[in-house]
Image 1: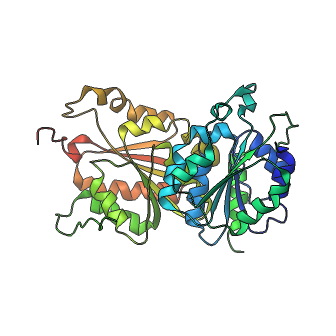
Image 2 (image 1 turned 45 degrees about the vertical axis):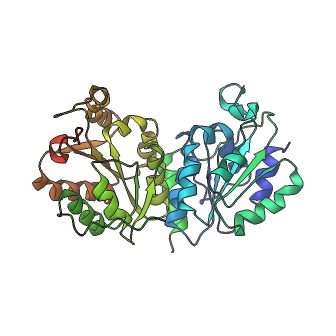
Image 3 (image 1 turned 135 degrees about the horizontal axis):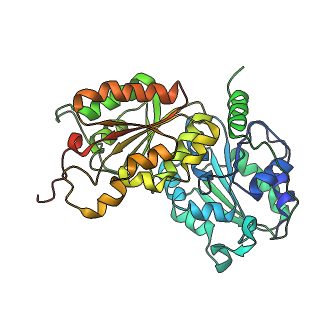
Length: 188
Length: 180
């Protein structure tokens, strides 16, 4: 099992041009803990929408690499978006699901993945170019490489431990998060 | 693969007017769930090399698409049936919280001439739901009004960062032919 903070920090090291969309709850805290960045579009709501926001972004910016980082509950709620992404086949999109098999924000109730529901298998069924499950920190470097140069759509199912981590709270004003992102992305 | 559906041999009508407005304002992504009322507009968008058509499994995916497109500097529009509005309610909060402009083109069911009572509970509250969700709602009953109202809606969404919905009434679309 991966330590979520270590894993997210390692895959975002020297992130360069990456555009990152973390899902609500712990995924947003993990990405913030790895280092605040204007090209993080932090979500505090819109559960189920993380992968689709990343798809709209990937289609709009085909020359940039886009990473969606939902938790397992978020991706389960928007599981159909994997099929939608599969239809469009965006080469520049990677979905990294932080799967602790629990709903952390609401009291650690087990999620569907706790019963063995397998995101990597679903993604392959949805015509993702590649999908793999990782659970050892030694694999983070290879995941990082896929974020920057793997042919998408790719799904990484990151099995993280369900231990509680301290909250790291980034910007919460949606207008500010959006505006900062757009300004950082547009050419000066 | 299927060959692209042709639309040249069909008389131009209000969907062409909407498509022309999409071209005028530079819509580059269109999200939709397949729909009879929107079928011609969907075909026009699919055949338009300027537009990425994104077929959705459920309408709330389209709300995320609109937000992502805007983050990336593109304009996106959503096409849905009135029943789809109900699927979007929580996801609409993304638009309001961040001030993403959005235009919805909503084909109405559950009203004038509806033969299927199962369409009525959602169709009869669609406009109210949209208003409660922060949308400005404009209803079109006549093809003569499409250009003006859709044009205004596009400008409000993309220049004003407002959320607006254009309700294409069942009188405009025509009753669903069930007996063929």
